[in-house]
Length: 107
Length: 171
View 1: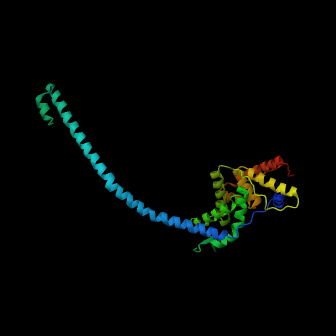
View 2: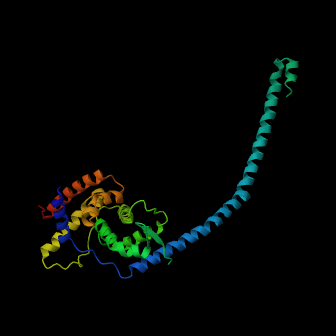
């Protein structure tokens, strides 16, 4: 499209388009109000960050840590049982093993 | 409200001045993107975003193209949220045309623009309605100039076809 055609097309649109509805008179104050509201929201969010952090810390140390300790305890019992059973089974099968070798295993 | 400062071509300008200077252009670009129904709300939203982004605006682009980018993105977000790319315009009262055909043509132009898909509509609006240059449109939309030109060409073709469908022709 040539520059002239382009110009004509713009002119056609300009001449025949509807006018844009006027801005409301209080638009500037509405914008100010929205900015202030969003600042208030932001400051609330900022205030919430340390509170949420503190709560997470408390939950972590009063609830999650003992659970882990409990879990560790359970794991230790399981391990001891396993070792005990393993020792039994080794003892049962040691009949075929040379006595010296068996005792040298120091089970 | 505190008075924030922004740089415009090396000159320090207040937010109020930016608003005074650009609000009618922002309004026009939003009107041609989404129609009249959500216009007031979107103009306000655009300027709230402009305010919030002052800190991140480094002046690497012209403030004009930066503001249009925010306005067009606000319009696109609105249209995506609403799940529609066509605005149905119910408001008829504000245009007092002597000749009913003028009013019908104005309606047809509006509908034809709003019928364009978004990628054609945004370049069409910024170039033909807001009268930015191709370079400025490219900067506003973060597109290569070649893409802007091809979308303008295609958009104009579709616009003329849409206009024809409604019963008007552009020669």
